[in-house]
Length: 291
Image 1: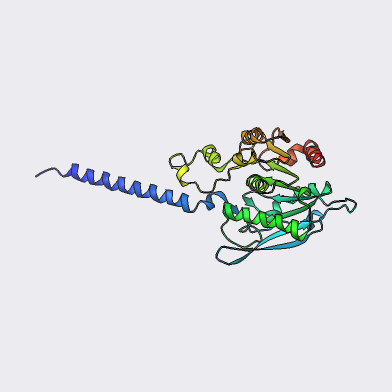
Image 2 (image 1 turned 120 degrees about the vertical axis):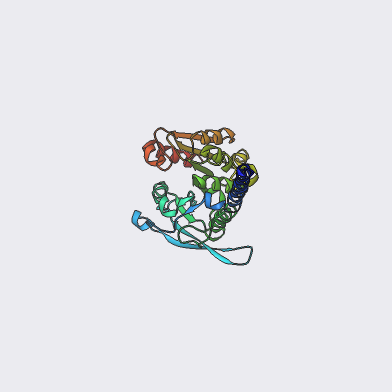
């Protein structure tokens, strides 16, 4: 009787090869069409409000109409400046990162408030009390544009009196907004990255996939920042394990003057302000005044 073992082994190898190919294809499709869920990690829970930071505020709801005609909302907090003596109201628009929501940035709001700035914090759709949905690069750009229009048209703020602060992913969102509105007074970009493509390389977990083909949400800040003309302050911590500090060095190198770079020794991804202490506060105050 003939030995069928080689035939069975050959069939098994074929089945394994087909199974591996199918698994790889499915993984590629997931990375391509569920990309947002690898970038955004929204939190719906509001852990604190401005009131708990002794800040008076107003709830703001901004309407957004989708391409399909659906009405959605962006939720925000308007925190007015404590000073009524300023000839022109200066405002900072706050763009938070890909995790948590606006409640995580209230310590920043408090600091800006102490600098006599009004503060407008918004949650992108999918975050906090904004409409529940899966965010994308396109939708977060729409949301911050709606916030900009609210400040200009509803609040009557002059564009050259609006600063934009962005932390981490929020830095990329702030840079994109500035690329569309060169009249912005200035940008403060904290712990942010050059592009999603470079972040993929940094994480080193998708090396086996054709990322250049699959990637549709790029947040390509490095390509935009060189075109900006307004003053920019980049801040970053040397011990950031989420976004390497070298990326702020790269953004700074690509940006045109006027620009500043503040590196805080020992600071991680989320504690640049705390670790920087008075040095950080003075740098921000000086930047605002110079602008």
